[in-house]
Length: 277
Image 1: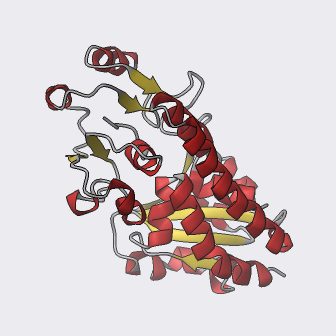
Image 2 (image 1 turned 30 degrees about the horizontal axis):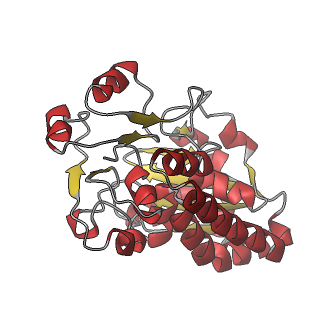
């Protein structure tokens, strides 16, 4: 049973599909609760896809699936949840010092690999993605030291991902660095910085990726405040639909999805960095 964010996708990619997967990203039953790039890993295995209701785990539903092991690795740290899940089956969790939902992808993969007896497969998956990251960085030396923002618009608010989330960490491994103005707005220990309308200049980095949460892309592309920034008016911002495979894959933050996202965004990122004066 996989309850943590992307835990099920990682387990399936390593060769063991859970009996149930909590569908944090809304991939749906047609995708078996994993990203479309990972459905082949599940194959014909029967999986119960648990819809993300935002109200916590349904312990009775979990019990009915009779899991031998529960993966709750990239999740909130909650002793009460751990204790209740432990009454059902042994639980694999993140290290004690990991912030909620912010265990890094390598550690998550290693923990899941060890828990399901797929240590070698986990090491191989990490190595393959490491190679994609290192080759991309080597091919693009201009990425080094370039300030970067991964920003979002949602409702009347804005925000940006910082260190601790794959939507920044992946770019950090390519040599880009956090825009200091955005990093200053982040909550200590968190991976997301809330940005008020009057603080949107925090997005004024050398390059940016901008997307939305729960709203049409037109709400972003037609945003006068965002369009007044040099990073957007100069064409140094990569605009992604919320459902764009790159955006969804980076949010998943698994070895397979990260490699896919990096290979997909590299040409756009290189073009944006080339415009930095």
